[in-house]
Image (cartoon, rainbow, N blue to C red; front, side, top):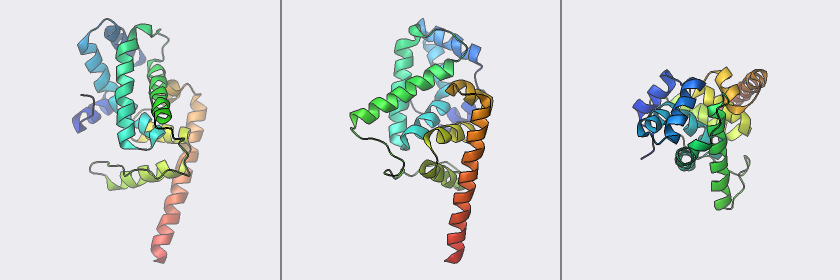
Length: 195
Protein backbone atom coordinates (compact mmCIF):
# COMPACT_ATOMS: atom_id res chain seq x y z
CA UNK A 1 0.00 0.00 0.00
CA UNK A 2 1.17 3.51 -0.72
CA UNK A 3 1.04 5.85 2.20
CA UNK A 4 3.52 7.53 4.45
CA UNK A 5 4.21 6.76 8.04
CA UNK A 6 5.89 9.32 10.28
CA UNK A 7 9.11 7.31 9.95
CA UNK A 8 8.86 7.46 6.14
CA UNK A 9 8.26 11.21 6.30
CA UNK A 10 11.27 11.78 8.53
CA UNK A 11 13.58 9.72 6.33
CA UNK A 12 12.35 11.47 3.18
CA UNK A 13 13.33 14.87 4.57
CA UNK A 14 16.67 13.77 6.06
CA UNK A 15 18.06 12.05 2.97
CA UNK A 16 16.91 13.67 -0.24
CA UNK A 17 17.97 11.97 -3.44
CA UNK A 18 20.33 13.62 -5.84
CA UNK A 19 19.03 13.79 -9.41
CA UNK A 20 21.55 11.11 -10.41
CA UNK A 21 20.40 8.74 -7.64
CA UNK A 22 16.78 9.38 -8.54
CA UNK A 23 17.47 8.62 -12.20
CA UNK A 24 19.27 5.39 -11.23
CA UNK A 25 16.22 4.31 -9.23
CA UNK A 26 13.92 5.10 -12.16
CA UNK A 27 16.12 2.94 -14.39
CA UNK A 28 15.84 0.19 -11.77
CA UNK A 29 12.07 0.58 -11.70
CA UNK A 30 12.01 0.31 -15.51
CA UNK A 31 13.96 -2.93 -15.19
CA UNK A 32 11.37 -4.31 -12.77
CA UNK A 33 13.46 -4.07 -9.60
CA UNK A 34 11.05 -3.92 -6.62
CA UNK A 35 13.80 -2.64 -4.31
CA UNK A 36 14.37 0.34 -6.65
CA UNK A 37 10.67 1.19 -6.53
CA UNK A 38 10.59 0.88 -2.75
CA UNK A 39 13.69 3.09 -2.34
CA UNK A 40 12.28 5.62 -4.79
CA UNK A 41 8.98 5.70 -2.92
CA UNK A 42 10.61 6.08 0.50
CA UNK A 43 12.79 8.94 -0.70
CA UNK A 44 10.14 10.88 -2.64
CA UNK A 45 6.79 10.13 -0.97
CA UNK A 46 6.69 13.20 1.24
CA UNK A 47 7.59 15.57 -1.60
CA UNK A 48 5.05 14.03 -3.97
CA UNK A 49 2.31 14.08 -1.33
CA UNK A 50 3.01 17.71 -0.42
CA UNK A 51 3.04 18.68 -4.09
CA UNK A 52 -0.28 16.92 -4.69
CA UNK A 53 -1.71 18.51 -1.55
CA UNK A 54 -0.67 21.96 -2.78
CA UNK A 55 -2.71 21.31 -5.93
CA UNK A 56 -5.76 19.53 -4.49
CA UNK A 57 -6.02 21.32 -1.14
CA UNK A 58 -7.56 18.11 0.17
CA UNK A 59 -5.58 15.37 2.01
CA UNK A 60 -7.64 12.48 0.66
CA UNK A 61 -7.44 13.69 -2.93
CA UNK A 62 -3.71 14.29 -2.49
CA UNK A 63 -3.23 10.70 -1.33
CA UNK A 64 -5.22 9.42 -4.29
CA UNK A 65 -3.17 11.54 -6.69
CA UNK A 66 0.04 10.36 -5.03
CA UNK A 67 -0.97 6.73 -5.50
CA UNK A 68 -1.83 7.37 -9.15
CA UNK A 69 1.54 9.08 -9.56
CA UNK A 70 3.46 6.09 -8.23
CA UNK A 71 1.44 3.69 -10.36
CA UNK A 72 2.26 5.80 -13.41
CA UNK A 73 5.94 5.96 -12.47
CA UNK A 74 6.04 2.19 -12.12
CA UNK A 75 4.19 1.68 -15.41
CA UNK A 76 6.03 4.29 -17.47
CA UNK A 77 9.54 4.32 -15.96
CA UNK A 78 10.86 2.81 -19.20
CA UNK A 79 9.76 5.98 -21.02
CA UNK A 80 11.80 8.33 -18.82
CA UNK A 81 14.69 9.93 -20.68
CA UNK A 82 17.47 10.95 -18.28
CA UNK A 83 17.88 14.70 -18.46
CA UNK A 84 18.98 15.60 -14.93
CA UNK A 85 15.47 16.54 -13.76
CA UNK A 86 13.74 13.36 -12.60
CA UNK A 87 11.57 15.09 -9.99
CA UNK A 88 10.26 17.47 -12.64
CA UNK A 89 9.11 14.39 -14.58
CA UNK A 90 7.44 12.93 -11.48
CA UNK A 91 5.83 16.27 -10.56
CA UNK A 92 4.42 16.47 -14.09
CA UNK A 93 2.89 13.03 -13.61
CA UNK A 94 1.46 14.14 -10.24
CA UNK A 95 0.02 17.33 -11.76
CA UNK A 96 -1.61 15.27 -14.51
CA UNK A 97 -3.02 12.83 -11.93
CA UNK A 98 -4.59 15.75 -10.08
CA UNK A 99 -6.04 17.16 -13.31
CA UNK A 100 -7.50 13.79 -14.26
CA UNK A 101 -8.96 13.49 -10.77
CA UNK A 102 -10.55 16.93 -11.07
CA UNK A 103 -11.96 16.15 -14.51
CA UNK A 104 -13.38 12.89 -13.24
CA UNK A 105 -15.09 14.73 -10.42
CA UNK A 106 -16.34 17.31 -12.96
CA UNK A 107 -15.31 20.17 -10.78
CA UNK A 108 -13.13 23.14 -11.40
CA UNK A 109 -10.87 24.02 -8.49
CA UNK A 110 -11.08 27.67 -7.58
CA UNK A 111 -9.34 29.17 -4.57
CA UNK A 112 -12.37 31.30 -3.77
CA UNK A 113 -14.89 28.45 -4.03
CA UNK A 114 -13.22 25.71 -2.03
CA UNK A 115 -12.87 25.40 1.70
CA UNK A 116 -9.79 23.37 2.51
CA UNK A 117 -10.15 20.21 4.56
CA UNK A 118 -8.41 20.24 7.95
CA UNK A 119 -4.73 19.45 7.69
CA UNK A 120 -3.06 17.40 10.36
CA UNK A 121 0.60 18.04 11.14
CA UNK A 122 1.46 15.67 13.99
CA UNK A 123 2.94 17.42 17.00
CA UNK A 124 2.90 20.92 15.52
CA UNK A 125 -0.43 22.76 15.75
CA UNK A 126 1.18 26.04 14.63
CA UNK A 127 2.36 24.41 11.41
CA UNK A 128 -1.17 23.12 10.81
CA UNK A 129 -2.56 26.66 11.14
CA UNK A 130 0.02 28.05 8.72
CA UNK A 131 -0.64 25.27 6.22
CA UNK A 132 -4.38 25.77 6.45
CA UNK A 133 -3.90 29.49 5.86
CA UNK A 134 -1.53 28.80 2.96
CA UNK A 135 -4.15 26.63 1.31
CA UNK A 136 -6.67 29.42 1.61
CA UNK A 137 -4.80 32.53 0.48
CA UNK A 138 -1.84 31.53 -1.68
CA UNK A 139 -1.86 31.08 -5.42
CA UNK A 140 -1.23 27.56 -6.74
CA UNK A 141 2.46 28.02 -7.56
CA UNK A 142 3.08 29.87 -4.27
CA UNK A 143 1.46 26.96 -2.39
CA UNK A 144 3.62 24.47 -4.26
CA UNK A 145 6.82 26.32 -3.41
CA UNK A 146 5.98 27.02 0.24
CA UNK A 147 4.82 23.49 0.94
CA UNK A 148 7.71 21.82 -0.88
CA UNK A 149 10.13 23.94 1.14
CA UNK A 150 8.42 24.15 4.53
CA UNK A 151 6.76 20.74 4.74
CA UNK A 152 8.80 18.54 2.43
CA UNK A 153 12.15 20.06 3.28
CA UNK A 154 13.36 20.60 -0.28
CA UNK A 155 15.88 23.38 -0.83
CA UNK A 156 14.89 26.28 -3.08
CA UNK A 157 17.36 25.09 -5.73
CA UNK A 158 15.79 21.61 -5.70
CA UNK A 159 12.31 23.14 -5.99
CA UNK A 160 13.42 25.30 -8.92
CA UNK A 161 14.82 22.25 -10.69
CA UNK A 162 11.78 20.08 -9.93
CA UNK A 163 9.27 22.71 -11.07
CA UNK A 164 11.34 23.85 -14.04
CA UNK A 165 11.56 27.43 -12.79
CA UNK A 166 14.50 29.80 -12.41
CA UNK A 167 15.86 29.91 -8.86
CA UNK A 168 15.17 33.66 -8.69
CA UNK A 169 11.49 33.05 -9.49
CA UNK A 170 11.21 30.42 -6.76
CA UNK A 171 12.88 32.73 -4.23
CA UNK A 172 10.69 35.72 -5.12
CA UNK A 173 7.48 33.67 -5.06
CA UNK A 174 8.51 32.13 -1.73
CA UNK A 175 9.21 35.58 -0.24
CA UNK A 176 5.94 36.98 -1.61
CA UNK A 177 4.01 34.01 -0.21
CA UNK A 178 5.57 34.44 3.23
CA UNK A 179 4.60 38.11 3.23
CA UNK A 180 1.01 37.17 2.39
CA UNK A 181 0.97 34.59 5.19
CA UNK A 182 2.47 37.00 7.74
CA UNK A 183 -0.05 39.69 6.79
CA UNK A 184 -2.96 37.25 7.00
CA UNK A 185 -1.80 35.81 10.32
CA UNK A 186 -1.25 39.28 11.82
CA UNK A 187 -4.76 40.28 10.71
CA UNK A 188 -6.09 37.12 12.42
CA UNK A 189 -4.16 37.99 15.57
CA UNK A 190 -5.61 41.50 15.46
CA UNK A 191 -9.15 40.13 15.17
CA UNK A 192 -8.55 37.74 18.07
CA UNK A 193 -7.21 40.58 20.20
CA UNK A 194 -10.29 42.69 19.47
CA UNK A 195 -12.57 39.94 20.77
